Image (cartoon, rainbow, N blue to C red):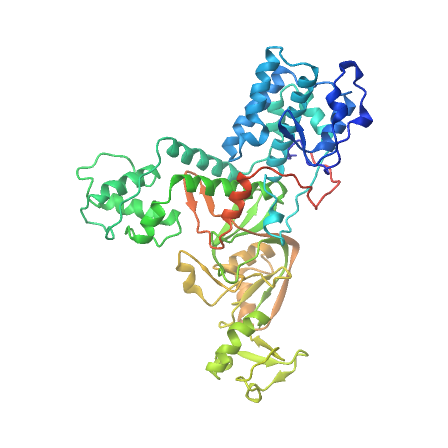
Length: 546
């Protein structure tokens, strides 16, 4: 299908002594190689040792790279920069130097084989990074459960196909699947690097809030910043110090793209976002391109995705967004986790059994302050067998190491889950649901929940997922809601759901930067800029996809 030609194999000991059938070239260095975690060859770090051993053993340790394929590989390595990767991870400078010596005929037999193996190693690295990403997400998040699958033919077979292809460049690109979303971020990276190449943008000087109708010398700098970001057209104006309607509209566009309240006023928060250096925005784009490489090659044809940092939830079919809504997510203290699962059923008029953490931190303190709290919120105290407990019989002021009851909120408009929830049972007790807190959807930053995802238009999503207009139209759902009876509706087929985290989103020519509410970007960037390391994915399969 659409998978990269080459996939990682288990790291193994490099032992060339057992396969030393190359006496004809009398390369003593190969006899001296010892099994080490990373083998040094001509000062280049050789990785995936077992693969290269198998590959060259099958070829009697003869060089396989010709001039045309080397040139194509060097081009691919150079172009990795356009994907936010680092060409030096693929031995770029050393390969360029060795290639010059190769073309001039200055490499002896051993040096030529060293060069050949380093070329193969570079291709291994490049393929691995395009297929899985350079960074292993499991190292950053131990709860990561989105599989990184090994598909297709054996890596040695794929590598053989690559070096034997008429065009290595075409072979690779025909097997790279990139989503439309990824390509848009790639375009954003190119645009912001062009801005950086031209000198970047200058900070808008600090000072009083800039408002429509004002005349201020700082408006000149504000205009320049808005033009560079693509929010304001670069047209001649009579008075560049005037905060006119065009500037106001451009500021609103900028604010919408940076998750700010779009009031058209350039206040402290807006100027702070404008003055973030372009280099930082480039890093932010690179981080999110890496996140996309972790997941975009294993996505199903249909799925629900929550962008936690973007406060959005959407439904995709055949790589097209068919429905989208605003969402509220967990606070920085109660983070919405990143994972995948499957929505198996919906529940209308749900009850809400208060999770232990929320019970301890929120409900019990509120009951101690206000004895009427449970009644106002339609909550019941129950034993763990479901039998009711009179709340007046409980000493709420006593300190309980473990509260001996559970609290359940009855169905209705005040229920914390609203009138419908989307169930994918998981260890985090996190799911999508309706909410009575509708006004919070109007906020630009929407990290308000205790970890679950609140959906602004849940019944539209419910109708799409149930996909049964004869039984589950909007009118049918309303009848069920009016009954106040808890009702389960199972999906015909479970729907994959991904809870992900992107702080950059591209929509055509517009690029949106989201707040890093959980401070996750820095760790990805550090790993992305570090020396590469290879780790076998845990989720493997023998499934063969072309």
